[in-house]
Image 1 (cartoon, one colour):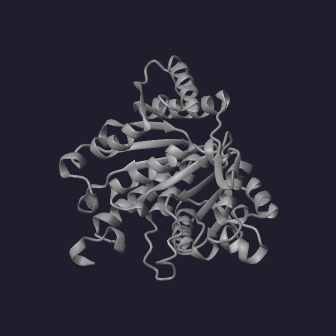
Image 2 (image 1 turned 90 degrees about the vertical axis):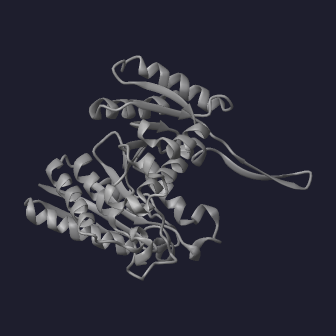
Image 3 (image 1 turned 180 degrees about the horizontal axis):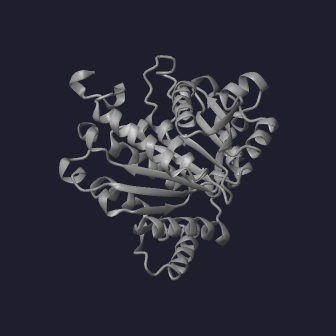
Length: 341
């Protein structure tokens, strides 16, 4: 099978971890007789340095013409003080919007091989922890109206969180279909006791649940969800929530595994085109030292093969290879026992 993949290495540790993931792609290509045509483009800070902007129209077009996109990470100290609209992160938001990647899938799975590295008590991690956060990715406060104005000589900033019924419904259906397929429960996370956008969110989610009566469903306020992820993560199957809440909760959930370097993600559209990336940032403090954990990126490749290409056996082979590496005590510094660091 032939597939065209756009590679965006990005900034910081991005090139290092993507290079390791490409090695895995090459092995899959050979073992399963596929052909992966890789195209490379500048993105984020690397694109700013070369083109003056974090995302060019040419890169957008290449992405649209690809079967999938593999991304490393963007940003870093170098670009922190430039104009907001030209920062690396703005390129990421724009690419998600241009590709209509409205569904962000972030799995959290506890690996028994790394039990020593989790900050949670053994009484909590001894229970099965395997849940998925489904995050709405192209709406909400990150894409709402933003402005800073001066009133009575004082600066006042506004960030508007806006959601339409259609935006909520389409991400809700993604979550419920996933729960149905994986035989998991659904927890819809909102702040409906305070926010109007969350009141609509809850109303739509409850309406969708009527069409999926076999799927156990409940609502949870985001502050309670933040506590429950740490105190009782095994209760969750699928968590579905809006953009900012999902961003925060999925980073919190990643530490259950012992390192954010273990957490992959997929950003999906209504087609098979998706973008796959680790949820961690560019980690400029360790860039170039060849110590970054590539597992999240490698597992993102596994998600790409399964979700965008329908290559289930190939995806499983990668997952098993990662487990074997952990069984054989291969470690990067972030998941190494403290007495060995």
